[in-house]
Image (cartoon, rainbow, N blue to C red; front, side):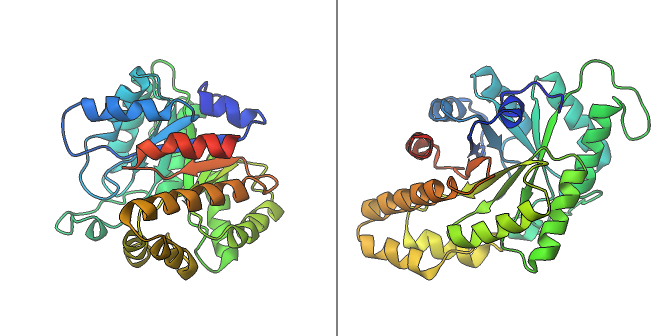
Length: 300
């Protein structure tokens, strides 16, 4: 691993890593970014989403602003919206702007993010994008052999959905991402630590936990209604009924929000006990103000 980012150094070390997430707004004012940046002081790095749930301000631009504000970004790149020309160009642009971490994902189908009339691209998938970035890192060339002028040292990561069955194929896909160059893996949100433990053990038996830093996702819920909506609309989130009932029993909207935060912290604390797990990824897009409480509780 050549990338000289804080995240890369922590992966090489032994510290327990905590990352978070920022979802750009649909706008052109930097004030929202500046307002959220103060919540990220105690995390290692912050993912900047790439049109995750709809059209957002450029993740590349937002990553550059966060970097200037002292927050280390993980620039997400979605292959749904770009062909290999644009992907390589944006990787070069990220390096030019001093961005040193990138998360390679395929992205939700456009019909799931309110953009059903848009054409998808999927010229290459996330595994192939990882391989492209590795070639740029190791050979210092583009896919066609064109030499890259100037430094290019990017830490690359990938996502994993631990809910996908059968587990054997799930682990196989993650192993391909690691073989293609992923130095870290961030998982979907965990609401059942014991089920996640079984998935992680299967990954560890294949030697994957030693080849890449696996970070378990946790998501602060704000209400029972939100939990049901997420469970219905996303294949990468499974929320047990007892979690939803616990939120309902909390009562008022503010009480449900506090209960959701407590559940998130409990999951994080339980996950930290798993031997070999390198960290936690707080899926905080839109809930940045909750990050300090979550991160401080998990690290304490």
